[in-house]
Length: 299
Length: 148
Image 1 (cartoon, rainbow over the protein chains, first blue to last red):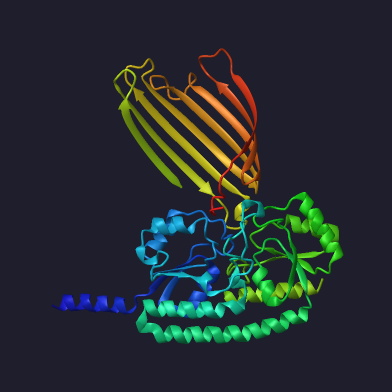
Image 2 (image 1 turned 90 degrees about the horizontal axis):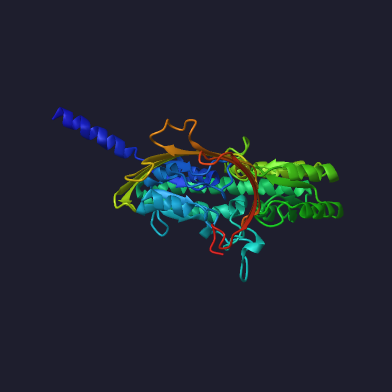
């Protein structure tokens, strides 16, 4: 009888500490989710910070990770189109399939930029039919997502509903304060136009009211051609472009060549949490991007 | 890492059984940072075919190749193939051997240009064959990730 009681109390103890298992597509989504879930969930990202989320090979270890997950949070807008369906299928966990209660598509909580109109084809490069998927880099678009995550967590773990609500409110409050600070810092830089490598930073530029003069890639996903680089030299010489921002997962040789020929500065910048040592969480990620604009203004 | 084992059995032209055993091991590596610019893949495959009533009886083959992507659109590959009857010393002096080396450039997702050198040592021929090949291939169809 005594042994049975010990066993029962151990079982009750473990149930009380049972945490949700959440898997996200990116480290940025994981960071936002951790802020809301607190210590009530174990949050793991499939991609690592420095990894380009467009190019991920569906490994069996991802399927094992998803097999026991209670919730999968996808970036959506087709960012994971090349690998997510294979990973979800291999996981054999019906609870986290698209449309199930354990699946959250973050992209549904924003209005995407650059949604292509008309017929699209490969001649335009690696176009995302649902629009630019990198919306997490606009901090003004995160509030709706934070609420959606809070509601999803509350639905999956109703007894901790009040904690998720409190965490979400605290996150949004800090976010709003930070947005005001970032806006002031960005305005002070006076940076109006930049060049980037890919279109990853377009949402951040939209938030910052900074124009994109051109990209080092001639088309999304297409490496720079000599002709395009020559065109960029002309663009840099004829416009007031402060600097080139190269997403950390791309090479910097092309930007270095442009610097050599025109003197324009370039900076390798984070686009995901943990993609650089400075980008430790969502706030420091955006903070690093604002800092890069400040560095731009000094050139 | 991928480990594969295949077995097949069926009737052959002598109306006896042919059995095929195939084992392969593939090791792939790609860095987390600058993912699209480098990768390495090494595959080794061993095959064993037992065709009863054929002249040579059981045959075995071994092939191993390493593919190294050293830039976004450039690849190097080296490959070794050896085959011989099982009754001989395994892959010894009498084995048929082919060595290949190639460099490939993929200007677009749908095209590839490759230059390949093969050195083929067949025991049935008096001397080795040296072969150079320049190949340009174009493929058609949707981009793998999207429906367009």
